[in-house]
Image 1 (tube, rainbow, N blue to C red):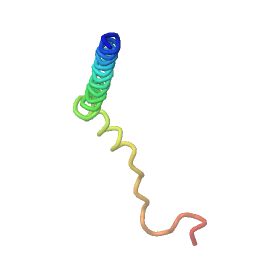
Image 2 (cartoon, helix red, strand yellow):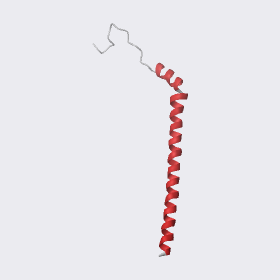
Image 3 (spheres, rainbow, N blue to C red):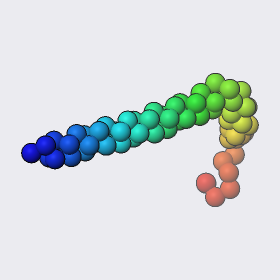
Length: 70
């Protein structure tokens, strides 16, 4: 009977250790993801705003429609 208790305690301890390890990995992963989001949204905002402005489609002059649209 005592051997079963020892095994159960060891299994529970191992499970808690693995669960803590998994939680640590998840926490680090989410922290890295949040750091990347802050980097892109806050630090690099101006660069991406300029690129977005340059990426706009040029306005077509009014008057004649483009060829093939008649």
